[in-house]
Length: 312
Image (tube, rainbow, N blue to C red; front, side):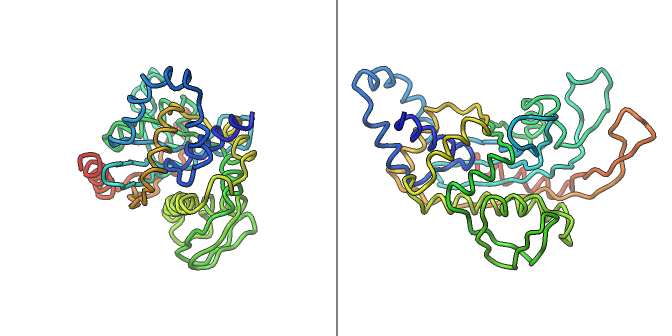
């Protein structure tokens, strides 16, 4: 059970942050497999190890619910992470939650219907990923979906993170941040990424803070050993709060490679800017809501960055 918890804890953390550093304990557990287990896995390991040689993309979706679903969730945090192992580079592209997008074709018999990007989970995770692919003109290999409980537990399990604020601000949840570096726990980190009302640039700054938080989590894990982390918390995090279509073998291959090569990732960000306008996105033609329409120039720049890293 101890071995199982150790591996699942490492896996759960990787599911959220893509690159896990300092996993000697989990690697040791994998290397201590019996010869029978090794023989059985040898045929698939070569294929799984391919993930360390080719560029791939992971879509990260943060749902606005705690624990078990008590309603249809919205995807408040939407990040596409492009991983180029040969160049040791990561590109984090943020997609605004209120972006004006078309409804999935299979969801309605009527053409020309629209919704907010954050509402796409109503039609399934597949619809969310497909719309991100359509928007950014790219192919997404994997998805990771976690809720707010999972996010808080992740940050607490790794001892908090140091995140940079562009300006001093307060939040609707009675937390405050100073301009510069702030060390935050799970609860504080969640308010940092959710706040938008107290920013002069509103949703645009919130989208930027999503990227800053992911970079902060990556940096924190890169300097910690798995044995220093809260193993039980990570294990529970994986079991209850995270969904993904990545295979365990692929994740462990990345972990083995990360430990052996001691990779220091170069991280870059791309953002889609937009303008809020009133549009009808409900069945009632008389009701209009604020949605964000993408600025084509910023969208083209994000697509260009993604293609450049994929082809380098």
